[in-house]
Image (tube, rainbow, N blue to C red; front, side, top):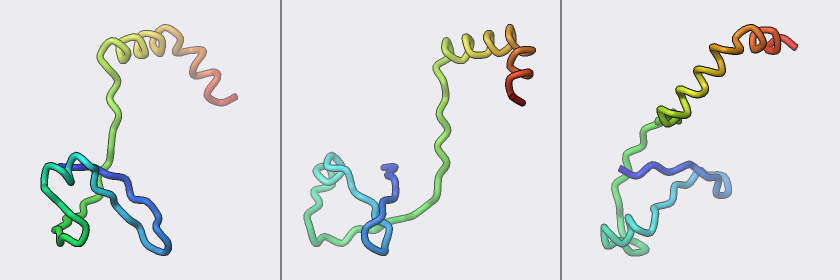
Amino acid sequence: MVTQRLRRSGGSLAVTIPKDEIDRLGLHEGDLVAVQVNKIQMRVELPPDVRAAFDAVRRDHAGAIEYLKDQ
């Protein structure tokens, strides 16, 4: 599955097909293709070591973070 971001093209929204997919499928300009559109949500996951460091800082400085959030 290819995930692409919508872009404005005049009054429409457009999706591009990456070159490697074009080559893999042997697509050419003018070919008809089927498109299934589903909205997805991307969630960035931190690497485990970075997440552990973040959690440690958040835990060790919880009071200061709580104080600063309302400033």
